[in-house]
Length: 337
Ligand code: NAD
Ligand code: DAU
Image 1 (spheres, helix red, strand yellow):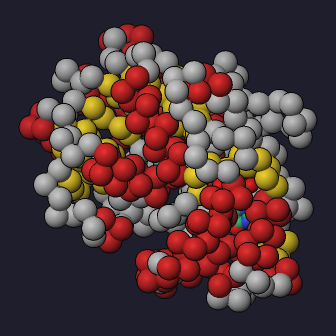
Image 2 (image 1 turned 180 degrees about the vertical axis):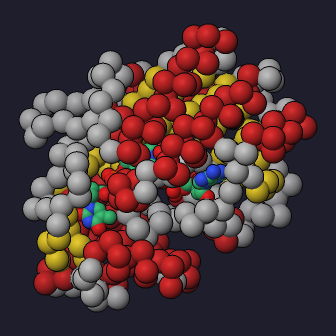
């Protein structure tokens, strides 16, 4: 079985590649990644010499290269993670989000259409549904209308519609997954949890947007990987699945938990200007996926402890990312020390 994993040098795609290489030694796993600022291959040191792991550097928005790779490789499955994924970057520079997330997805769909793929799994996000209010009894279901609020979520919603259209029009076998916020090993330190861990460890201020009361529904990345495995192998074509584990936390609670676990002071919290169009709350109803047999292993309390320990033990990985380019981004974004 040949599996193309796009974005396999990033956070979730990288964890998925490692999960698949270990779990399915008989599958050939092809990591297709352009190695943008968010992609790095050092995370794959332990598997890079495995016979069933392969890397191909390619831009998914480069039609000619994608077509020729797909023609040569004849993949059985495509699991599509590659994307511009950071909401803040989409607010300051939306265009690349349209190129990668919309055009890139359409080119991959065209390439998959030329072959007899068993399944094209499109990894999307709960952000396509927009925001919920603070009523704890409301959840996103697969029937919730799409109402994206940021350029990032609008680009992901556009790609979801294209995937649906290729299924309806050309009968391409597809699934769409919409997951809540992930955390865990190899999370790029621009996002809330790894940013907080790395800055608290360096005794640096942590920027919390607005009043810190916005809510996210956190899922450990290993649980996201097992969910995609099930969707890829078990789900009927054309179905959409929400992925989440009922772990809602305010941003302030997340930051306080990390500070407390690391034995530091809450003086490190700096409330900063709110994100433009900041979605209030995300919360997933995962009932449909649970009916396929999926169950998350991590509760947030154990998952965050595991993650903090991982960052303590893997300083070399994230310290290498906090380079001049990263610091320039951070200073432009936050104006705090
Ligand atoms: P990430 O930013 O960590 O990684 C993205 C990867 O895609 C990188 O390796 C990058 O090099 C690659 N990439 C970017 N542009 C490319 C291009 N033009 N061609 C080829 N490769 C390219 O992202 P992530 O957080 O791992 O998210 C992966 C996917 O999961 C995204 O589609 C995202 O929308 C979705 N998602 C993320 C979360 C989350 O909490 N991080 C939650 C739900 C869904
Ligand atoms: O919900 C799924 C989405 O989760 C994915 O589709 C995105 O790819 C992923 O990046 C993530 O988006 P968020 O915008 O929710 O993640 P982020 O880590 O950027 O922010 C989480 C929350 O924390 C959000 O409410 C904004 C806030 N925040 C973020 C940063 C970086 C802060 O308060 N301070 C910060 O410094």
